[in-house]
Amino acid sequence: MKSICIVGGGYGGIKALEVLAKAKLDAKVTLIDKNAYHYMQTESYNFITSNISLKDITLSLPHLVNAINKEAFFVQDEAISIKENRVICKNNTIEFDYLILAVGSITKQITIFKDFLEVKELENATKIKEKFEQLLLAHLKKKKEFSSIVIIGGGSSGVEIAASMQDFINDLKLDKEISIILIADIFLAELDHKSRKKVLDILQNMGIKVKLTLVKRVQDNRIWLDNEIINFDLAFAATGIEANEFIKNLSFSKENGFLLVDEYLQVAPNIFAVGDCALIKDEKGNILPPTAQIAEQSGVYAAKNVINLLFNKPMQKARIKVYGLVIALGNKFAVAKAKNFYFEGFLASLGKKAIEHYYKIPLKMKINQ
Image (tube, rainbow, N blue to C red; front, side, top):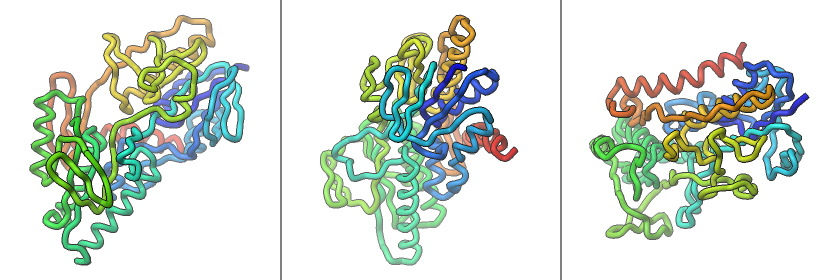
């Protein structure tokens, strides 16, 4: 019996597991993750501002793996290295014939922000949520007159969290007391100039102060920009991504720390890489953004190619594409962009929520069957 191992229980790893399960293979399938939960990080903006709870953004990985494939195994452990068709973990060694790497990424480690919390890890997102709520409570009790919250990073995560926080503050009529400041040298690079300008205008109309500049220095709850110093009560970073130590230490070819994959998503004849840990390109050679939809698509292709190898069939080239982008700007407003099509408002917000539920509800239903 062949052994298939998936390292990582995020969007790409779960999608790969689903594809393998549908094939009803005579193979041992094992999923390894350091955590016992699947974290739906794309909804962190709603979690931090208490629009949804912990149970809405997490699923039990042991139960989810069992629900998807009752013959599959879940191992809670942290992968350290790969040696001779074995995944070496802190507490276990898992042998494999085929391996899918789906370990995601971490927030880019920038020295100047080393003491800031970040949102890619659930534990940190929970801490930000708690600090945000404590700050709100202090103002509701009139124990504070003015506070500033600084968010570093102009990607979709930073923008969504800033907008969700501002929306919450506005609803509580605390917008004269609590200031949201978004600082970024690069702002929504995945959008075209016109769409970026629209989002920027919306954020500013909500009351968010957007500073498109670099941070020069951070010390004692103060941030130095080119021409001003900003005092803050709460600050966190959403500063892009980098590969984790496990990926960095692997001997496979890399670019900027991420695994270089071929057109079949291989890094070796029997090893595939999907999602954020890999540098994935479209058919034209353009680097694709590290989003959940890219992770899911690549997980599907990698799993299908493992199946093809098992049955001595030709592999499929990974034809991965960006179908669109929806950015939530508060609880009832969003912007959506797909090719040359752009729309905004409540309808776009409903679309964003529909996408999130379309992913989450089937998984919850499987667990509860």
